[in-house]
Image (cartoon, rainbow, N blue to C red; front, side, top):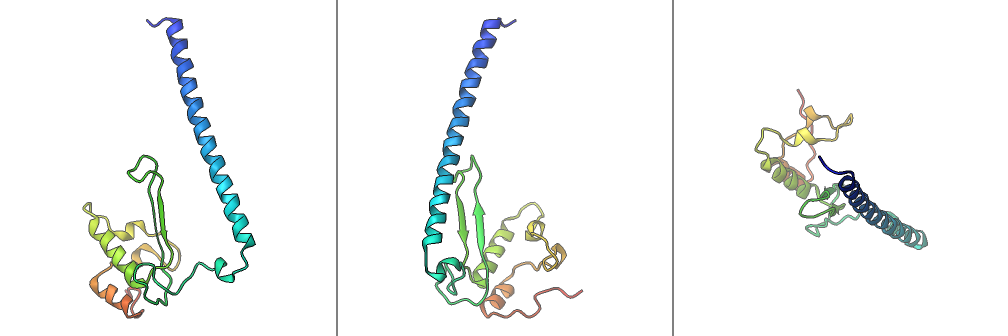
Length: 152
């Protein structure tokens, strides 16, 4: 059986370790808040109206003019190879968005598909999701929005 002294020693080390972690996280949060406040001040001081509009009619990937609105976001969690990195592409052409969906859909090896991960709302229900194909990519490239929903 462990002695009381060894238990106390263990608990003291545990508390010290957790206190150090909490302090590190608190410093990280403080830094994020300061960065957010600075960014907010910069936004408020900007007089350029384009600064407030995220939409650009040029695709981030192809530099081609686009007429649609598509964005891609990828977040990596704590402990991943890209520890807490986030990537956001706000100006993506419909064609590139379709290509990305097709690529993601082709990665599934467990019977799932992209429709299992759709964020549903009345205009985007799981049962209405078309699987991305070369045909849907071509339609997106040509801005052809006909037959966007399966009519059953």
